[in-house]
Length: 219
Image 1 (spheres, one colour):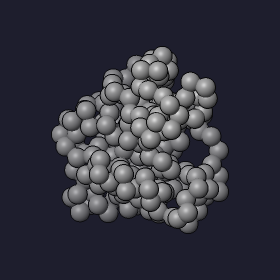
Image 2 (cartoon, helix red, strand yellow):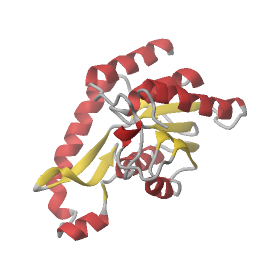
Image 3 (tube, one colour):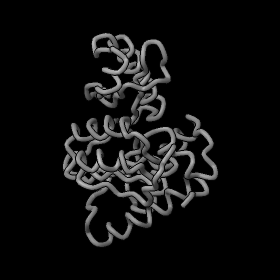
Image 4 (cartoon, helix red, strand yellow):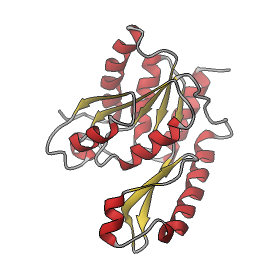
């Protein structure tokens, strides 16, 4: 069940979605990647569906005493999404994280500018939004991204990932019209376990993929 790399995973996911598109089930698709890891996967999906490609930048919100300990996430202009159980366990409140949210929102905006290189944000109203990541473990970041995309009023919102934990799948299915995944292994452990090559994706790869996608679909 392991993928060679994100490109291979994207090709397999694209094949599944292409069948749906040919059946008329994915009208006017617009592919959105969660950077950075979701971009190589989404690029293959966008190529197969002959669809535009853009990003939904999401940021983890870390605890004040350990920024690597995620207690929430935010994406787009949507309010931050917190893991209420984690907050309660750590004795934290949303107000206590206001400065952290502000810093992550600023970094989110900076990355959007770097990745898009002056291109406008996508217009999704009435379209089929296909949100792609390389995999879902807890799903909290994807949930924040889903809510940000929902605010852009797509006609249909599909979340597509090569691999997903059963716990995340159960939560995310309630937030989208459809969750498309190739594998839901158990036990899950981590997304990286299901890839032979899970090398970190660099910003330059994201920029190049978006640049190539924009050049392939001139306005």
